Length: 259
Image 1 (cartoon, rainbow, N blue to C red):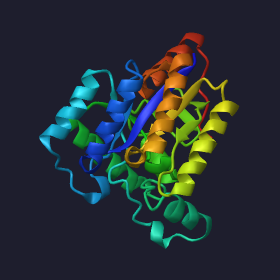
Image 2: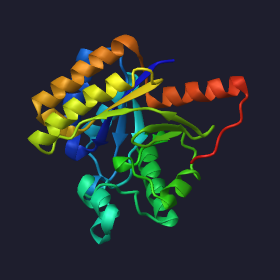
Image 3: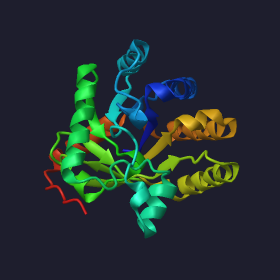
Image 4: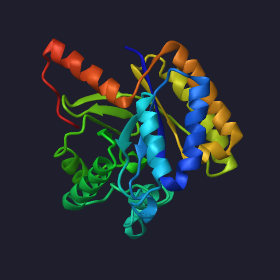
């Protein structure tokens, strides 16, 4: 099975207009490709109340075959400013203070995940996956995640089927749009990454709202998607997790522990 999972990160009312541009562009380029929408219930503490039109759009996307996944609760790492050394570099500078679940205690991670799930449930949005902002899960967050019935989560380089604890190497194509040099570097890096990982069973392409603001980035991403969709089966992350689980059950191989 050679799969392709496409996701749009940071989906919230504040980013909705850009997310729609990205979703429409993916549909135009790859009409049969579903998308996993990574929804943030209280993006940057902007409040959990949302426009009806935004919720209608999410439901319409699901009706067309897309999937909703929980992407943290606020997408903000309030403790990033207090870190030092490597942690400061990663949590404050590399992720610009958005690695919400990087340093949370087990209790606080539980609280935020529960609030996010409740928000989704209240709006009729079923979620089967959790993707931490910036793919950063600290020990407390890992422990909390295992107490919920999510089917999968992901890190920067791995797809984890939580029911069977399978960890699959899954390169993630993602762009950095914060400056012209970073945009140019990420385009080159993504070309090299795909060339080096053609044998991977899963390739992930993650789009962010800011990508829609830069035609060079958007064009490059859509061109890669078109190429990948010709040789891989596009599917949601939940669909991929389900296939992994079914294959493991058919073989009756015990799951491995998370490392």
